[in-house]
Length: 342
Image 1 (cartoon, rainbow, N blue to C red):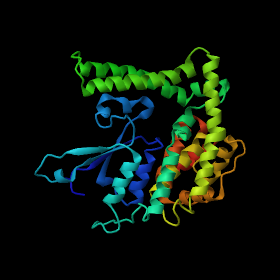
Image 2: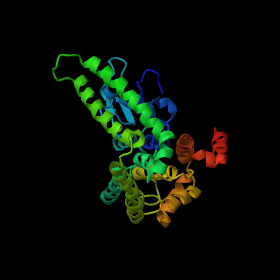
Image 3: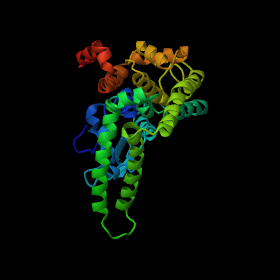
Image 4: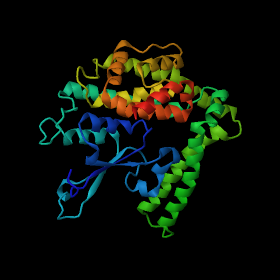
């Protein structure tokens, strides 16, 4: 790729569940690493809430893809960029930017569904795995009783809450300084309000993890966590089992909905302590107290574990997640296998 052509910038974090979706898309579509720039945003430390990042994505989420606008890609004009702020929009853009008719060295088949029926099913699957009540990030922070909560407070989830608490204090002070004392509405003022709101949400979870025992609040939290694992997650898996065609979500070829589903399912398996292999499903079923994953989802996962993009992206992302979460200690051979992969 010519050095004079401005490149897109993808903001991700290696172990972020939703960051893996556009990374899978890039690989499946045949993009090479010299066609875009990757920048890391450490969400564990709350870097996604830095005022500088909020100017790129005011939601404070990752991934974000910043792309040069078509009319400003020539050397004669100043390059202007626009931000794509969610996995669906990013992958739609990446798919449309390279397809089987592209006049490029590495054209790739479209991942967009070819029919209205396929688009409807694809949207259904994507919306389902992005529902807040089956969010892998919440599952990772969940606890069913005081013993599990105490264990997580001493492990990675507790560290994330502590690091983010410190980050919010720093970023709120920085944003207030930038906003000044004029009192007039400003973008900087909106950043302050946004950060205060997010800080309060973090403080609420921090209070559950590290505050003085409040049995009533803790029981509400524990009941929510139990219902998520025992009811909401099995219900979502049943709905997915009924929806997908097999072996992939829409049939014999992968599509955009596959990228979302496999990233979500692999992380759910990892949160349950399972490795990113078909064998890891057993840990999820154990965590779900005997629930059995359906045959279509099992076949779907098997098919994906054999793809190079799964091995290159989802295996490292989830092995590192398991390592940071302490699960890797239970299976050190998995870590050795990861290192031999390079």
